[in-house]
Each structure stands twice: as C-alpha cells, then as structure tokens.
Image 1 (cartoon, one colour):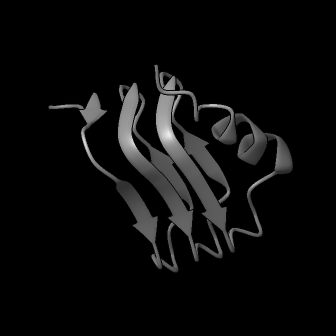
Image 2 (tube, one colour):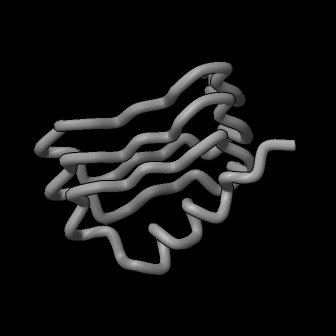
Length: 79
C-alpha cells in the first residue's frame, strides 16, 4: 500500500469527531503547516518519521497527552 512520505503544502486533520488514531508512519516532512484541531477523541498520533514542518498548530485535542503535543511542536525547524 502506498505511504505518504512528504507533503509540499499544508497537512490538516480537523473536525473528525470519531477519530482516535492518526497514523502516517512514513511521513517525514510537511512543507507548510501541520494542523491537528477539533479532534475530541484523538488520543494517539503516530508520525514517527516526521522531522520537519513549517509550523505546527494543535488545538482542541483534549485526549492527546502533553508530551505528544510537545514532541510534534519540536518539528517546526525547516532547513
């Protein structure tokens, strides 16, 4: 199966009210903004290869643990 490895623009996951897991294990780079917002049930984000994004915005995701949010926000350095 094909796997998303890079996004040249923005990558947004928003308002999927039943989403509990977001997995894109091969995604390494987001050229624009990474947005995860308005996801009340989202508790697991698997973006293990993500090393760069222009900006990261995470809002209204009450079930994500603070460490996950912090780790995602560390990916904002695009060389």
